Image (cartoon, rainbow, N blue to C red):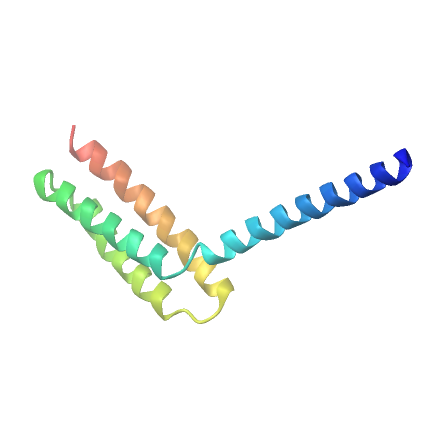
Length: 105
């Protein structure tokens, strides 16, 4: 009886871990959807406002690059393209954040 109980518990635990792994993978895949695009658009607009008070030419050029990346992300068809473009967009936005912070000092 004890051995059967252990097998059942082990099977349930393995099933739960596998289910959690699958749901984490689903969240990663679903992370680059329309809500992601909207969040990045809001981030770009926030940076635009920040740069309006402390202008920086390089950061302004970065905003144009970020908007282009967002358009490309919206037009991308495959998941691989969307993931690649999202990584590029994140890098551009991080660079703009750094430049805007330096301009604000």
